[in-house]
Image (spheres, rainbow, N blue to C red):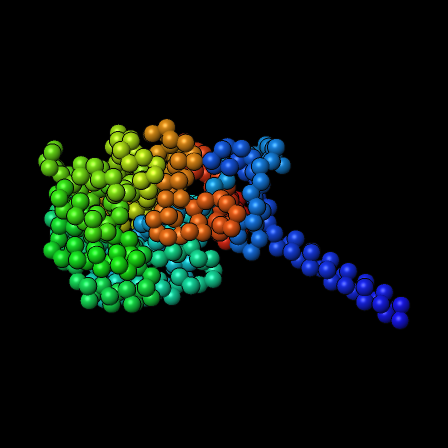
Length: 413
């Protein structure tokens, strides 16, 4: 009897030991200089969540200190690494979406909104359905948080329309939009429109009632119209200072009212081409780190070599050696070729803001705006979406990227 009891006791000890070992192996510990304080911390991860953040005296490896921050969140990704979310050519596939996501991880983007620009009803329906299917792919680790429709309910006027094809620009149509919303499996998280276009106010109210974040962009609205759009639910300006005519009235233009409205957040592109340094500085001084979001507007041409390419319409797109994307036929920019990691480094250099403030604008703020309550901060209980990096002259140099606690990218491997 004693032998049986002793045997069972030993089995119990071994069983508990195996559980402890399993729990131990399920945990991951990350060290780095916390982006908010520049002080060393240890972050413990289990089952994709942060379970502890603890200050430590020094890093285990002080010879290569790295900053640690929440993963970057980009609200405007038209495509990446040769993959377009917008085109009608039928090349968008689950494999392509995974490839674009993996390439974005290398740049520190752990969450993003695939963005569809003005196109035909058929293309938007098909691409939204494809993205909705890809969104639940476990291999993406939840990196796609929803979709951004930039257009087609925007200004038809040259300049304000930007590079959006005129033939696809149209007035808001709720029935059409509801077809898209159903095709997306209710995953349209934000839409950019021009508030001066007929029917926009009612459309803004209906989107807001559905919980969709309304942005104003590619427009030439006056102060009264912009303020009315905000009162009806519009929350943010899409790439302030862009989607605008090259020549505007010095007093009566859409920039001043957007800056003046304190209820309106602003997203800005800090790639070195879309805005001049002094514009970024002024926009930042007005909106501050609490009401600014750094976005990229990257396209499928991002990460490709310099040269001339063709868009869906057969027009020539030029990617310069400096990294500028332009549509020569209209003399306008054609989105960006730079991820928001570049914007983080540049806004720090231009405005003198801290790393903590820059990360707030590129992670915390978009997480709050789009209702991603488990992202954008390094705290107990948050998703373990983390980046380890150095700060370069014009970009963040990403060394490791974790998504849901999984190491999805490591430089040199």
